[in-house]
Each structure stands twice: as C-alpha cells, then as structure tokens.
Image 1 (cartoon, rainbow, N blue to C red):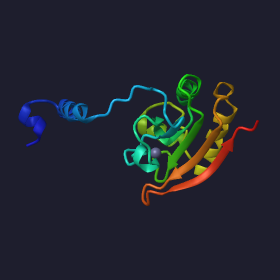
Image 2 (image 1 turned 90 degrees about the vertical axis):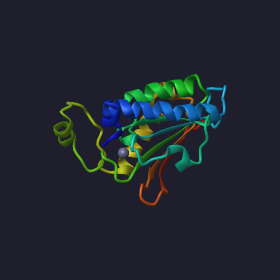
Image 3 (image 1 turned 135 degrees about the vertical axis):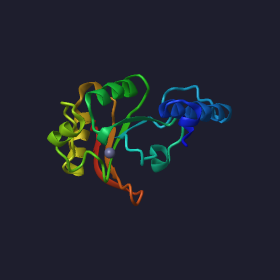
Image 4 (image 1 turned 180 degrees about the vertical axis):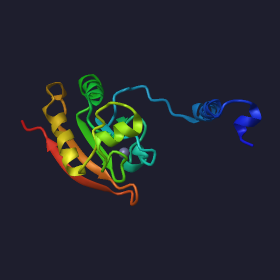
Amino acid sequence: MSKAAETGESAGMTEIADLLAANRGYADARANIDDPRPSRRLAVVTCMDARIDVFAVLGLHLGEAHVIRNAGGRVTDDVLRSLALSTGVLGVDTAVVMQHTRCGLAGVTDDELRALTGADLGFLPIDDHAAALREDVDVLARTPYLSRLRLVAGVVYDVESGRLEDVVRWTRSG
Ligand SMILES: [Zn+2]
C-alpha cells in the first residue's frame, strides 16, 4: 500500500509533505548568503531536464550564479526578462547557455509537440544543437538592454558521459 493510501492523502499531498519535511533538515544546516548578486557574475540558461544538476555539472556553489531553466534551455522572452535583471541590477556580465543531449525538444517538431500537449505554442524545438546555440547566443549578443553582457558561451551537456562540449563563444568588443 502506498504511503498516500495509508494516510488517506492524495499522492500529491504526500509529495508536498515530503518536501516540507526535507526542508526542516535543510533549514538547520544551511549557510546564509546575504548578497543577492551572483559572486561569479554569471548566469546559466539551461533545460529543466531532471538529469541535469547544474551546480554540480559546472562546479558552482550557492550564491555564485543565476540559473534560469526552461524546456530546452532556449533563450525565450522570459529568459531575456530575467537576464535584464541579472545584468542590469545584479552585476552579471557572463552568460552560459547549456543545452543537452537526449533533450525532449531535440528531433521533434512543433506540430508533434502540439499534438502531444494539446497546447498551441511555439516550443522552440531543436534540430541541431550548434545551430540552436548560435541562434540563442546571437539573441543575447544583440539584445540592446543586455549590453552589460561581456561574454556568452553556448555548450552542450552530454547526459550520458557528464561532459560538456564547448560549441560557441561570443565576446563583446570594445
Ligand atoms: Zn532538455
């Protein structure tokens, strides 16, 4: 019998209870960081994929970077909104766009994703990581209000080997 059935709660309620219970241990052990500005002046845009432990993959620690995640790790309007604050308010000057192998958005079409989800959206599917990364890095480079960005890198994380492929790099001249 599941824990949910035993307690008479829905499975979802049990999940939330587990999260709250885990938090009690976390709160006692955590380090407090006062400064909201990422100490490495870095923002990482990456996929929501559950296999990616962003901090571990990149050797990052709490307080060092903004992490902005969505399906595919694509540069959407909402990523630009977040980066406007990262760069304009919180001192970020470097961005890394990290896509990954075996992504759910790779090798599919918008039509297929619309049929699967019932959502009439542009999903930004990825045909080719190098092309998608170049496109996304280019958007960051030419967005006027992100002019404080000095360096943008596009990389692909291999979910099987754990290694990164360095695909595209842009630096602001002048
Ligand atoms: Zn993905």
